[in-house]
Amino acid sequence: MNIPFVDLKAQYHSIRKDIDTAIENVISETAFIGGKYVKDFEAAFAELYGVKHVIACANGTDSLYIIMKMLGIGEGDEVITVANSWISSSETISQTGAKPVFVDIHPDYYSIDEKKLEAAITPRTKAIILVHLQGQMADIETIERICKEKNIHLIEDCAQSHFSEYKGVRAGLRGIAGSFSFYPGKNLGAYGDAGCIITNDDELAIKMRRYASHGALKKHQHEVEGINSRLDGLQAAILSAKLPYILKWTEQRIANAKLYDKYLSGISEIVIPQVRPDSVHTYHLYVIRAQRRDELAQYLKENGIETAVHYPIILPSLKAYEYLGTTSDQFPVAHQYQSQILSLPMYPELTEEGIKYIADTIAAFYKA
Image (tube, rainbow, N blue to C red):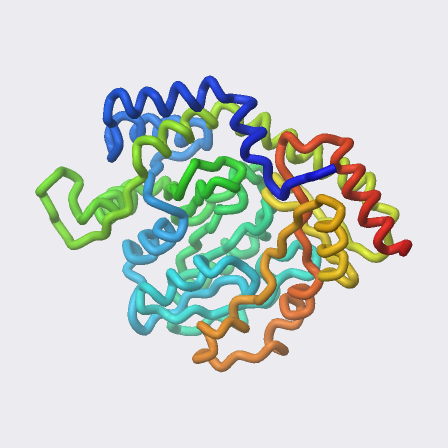
């Protein structure tokens, strides 16, 4: 049996008519940049997600940068984020001129450890980029309270947590703004780079939309210097075609995670994902911690199962951040877990037969 890490082809075939029609419409109307299909997606996503403003942009990385720039973050400022994430969460901080400050991860849930947050705050701290990793939200209630007490901005990185919830509130709805990536492998994915920002702040929404479009809300009327970060019409139309299915796909991901839990629960050499109380975990990733991780990954590969590691090197240990002078003992949990975490195949179309085969193969590896 061959099981890919993500099967985008299976998803395409399940809604092929919708996707083909969307692409054909954009081409026939030559609506490639901006226009109707982008506006339609922004409106549809805003309605389904329950937010006032959706600002489409070129990718999730840009969305973080745009938020920070329009909050006035820059030279001399500090922004806190989690030690174990994709580099977008930190490189965008540096791009504004600010300094990234890393905090260790929670030992059970892998998002930022809220108990260690306050110790990282200094008079220069202007914001926290709160990354909701793997499909599960961080303890945003505690972090929101700290941000309000310290008068710092709460920015939510929701790239891996579309429609995730904590105590009935979706990711991206408690901070000043939420950043989304629609990279093809995301729970809601385009067929190329794509992203958006969500916010309920009217003034900030105008600033961000203007900045993302060369500093102009109307062509040739450039009020400020901005950047070029536009979602193209093809990607917007594809996202609109997929949007009606996202809640069903999310339910299927959750059901598949429960099957994983069932079939993996008896294997003592691994730790399955823990779900934070009062959370809806949408399982962008199903991440285990495994003894002899690299050997296990190779064994699974030899048996037709594709896996991934998110992420093999924690951010503060990357060469890019040597200048910060941090050491691994400042991030003991993230440092320990980077050699243990393994992401198993996860997508709505994954079958129970496939999940059982993966679990049986993992069991066979440790028995051998």
